[in-house]
Amino acid sequence: MAIPPKIKGTQSDKSEVEKSWELFVTEQKQKEAERLEDTAKFLVGIISISLTLFISNRPETYEAWLGNSFLIATALWMLSAMLCFFVLFPWRYSYRDDSPESIQSAYRKIAKVKRGILILGVIAFLIALGIASYEFVNTGSTKQAPQVALPADQ
Image 1 (cartoon, helix red, strand yellow):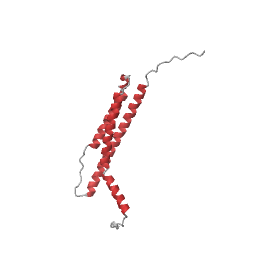
Image 2: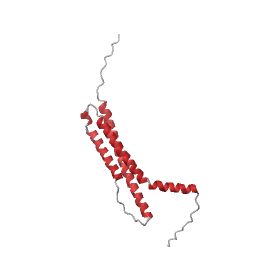
Image 3: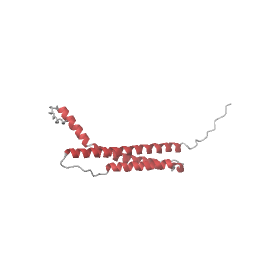
Image 4: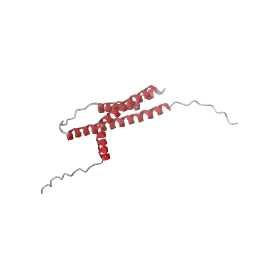
């Protein structure tokens, strides 16, 4: 059975609004990797700030604060920071300089990989933040409240 030839359609005249939206979408796709890198930079800053806050505001029961939970949270924070640095790292991708389709394909692959790594970094950060917050609240709430003597009913 013979394969029918491909039919090329003619492009209809598009309005200026349609052309501007197509240009907008194309520009946004081209900026995607850059936006992912900016997000990774922001997350690295947030990781640094949150780690500093948790370490500098440790509860009086310091031994409990250094338990396994806080060590796990710190390890997850470090993993998150490393993943964000991988998003920022310039990787080598192969493409043909003379082929716009090859360049576009490579760029899509870059954005897809960076997005996946960034999502893993965000998940690790949120889990670490949850663990550390839980431990911080529980460790801080183990202090005994001062006992106040109430007057006896007469």
